[in-house]
Image (cartoon, rainbow, N blue to C red; front, side, top):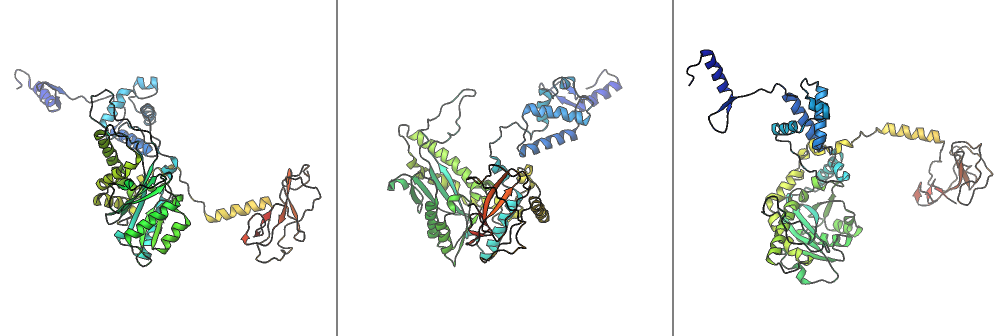
Length: 487
């Protein structure tokens, strides 16, 4: 192979051959080149990638331009010896370096962020999740629920205006799809699953004024339809949903079920709670804005359910191009989608991912709480709170008498210092001519008088009377002991 060349040249050629890469023609070999002008080391690039992924999880993701600026500042901080002049000119890394960096770290990509409210972002914190598991384990210890008696109830809104499915078309050319009608009225779908892997026939809250049996055509046997004016859940509809749960589970005070659901206001009606207590339904509510983490339906079932809904709606539109679909077709389409999505494996995976069954408090890692880490702050100690309260009371100088359970007047030791004033107050309770010699702290009149006058600072004064008697404690308006009421 190496003929007519010196031994030293043969050694060099052999070494270059061993360290070379083959070009596309299969015959030409080029020695590998070591980049002597590399800006970052491997460890520094790994640190930069780790930091970028972390801040993206904390809602501080960087666009491409900002990431290039960050790389330049990081190079200055690391005192990199090979910072290109183009970086100093633009005070940012070049686009060529960015694409080369992403190719070296394929786990990084450029994606559009998903919109999320700040309340839902910071709500799943360790405190709220631990509080839920404390209540959940207490209910399990008290009632010893089996998996088939652990239910999860969730709601999904259905509408005829659905996002179309993706279709195969020519690249770079726009493609048309079926035109959805107006959004129209929405319908509420109520799904109920158990930790054993099965489901209870769903509930449909249908908008309308008059009931028609065709509304439930093609639905799952045992499904319940509830007619409501706007198709949304309210206290009365939730009561009927609990009645449906009781009928399908045969629960009673001696054979209870655990119902896990969100804490929406419509679920907290007094009639529904009384019905649940009388029929052995133990209700456990999730912390606010945590359903995407703690509700099995949201974690594993509703995603495939809505995907199948879109596919079935697309099939219906293709097979009936002239027909105008209405919201009353949704129960039939939703029932078919529910059968495809609510499989035992899908249900069980949702309960396992949330740590509800099998019970696993450690199902969430630190990355799951990284969203809320930007808003966390340590809870102040109880002693510090009491000291701050005492300090405020001393500065204000307000010492109200201790509440009493009788109608007797407070003693002199309980009363504050008396500072009589003769200036009349205006009709709105504020003095038109404040007393410039009035003390900064408020003063309370003698308990022997039925009326007292509190002066708040040197600029205004307001009349109050000391309320005694009533059912409450400390309330304004004279209904509680020791309360203050306006005349």
